[in-house]
Length: 134
Image (cartoon, rainbow, N blue to C red):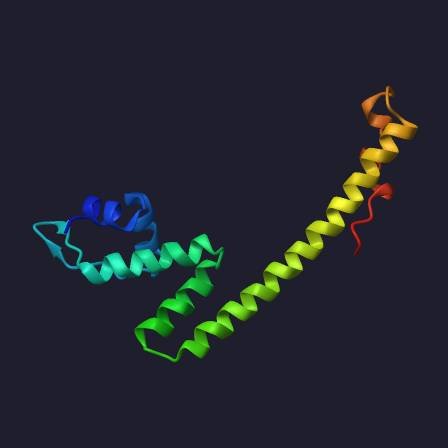
């Protein structure tokens, strides 16, 4: 199948396929008459890549998952990738909660101390006032 058909079958764009090929995530196919010709395994690979990216796995994590699939490694390897990813997600959530608390305090401080003042005097813009829990 040609690249446009592959893109539609896998639910990705043609530039995405070319990008994945350029970074080695997807193996470039053989060419026939100067055009790329893809097979069913390419559809499956792209769907897996898309699924991993939808789950916010990084390109490198996705590459590792694809390699484990190609090498037919045990599911426990994929589970380990997912556990590491979950820990990263939880860390990001904690950081975002701390940031939310900080920004909410700045907004509240602005309402009580400087509403109506000139923007440069706003408590939100005072670097010493920011503490993101770090």
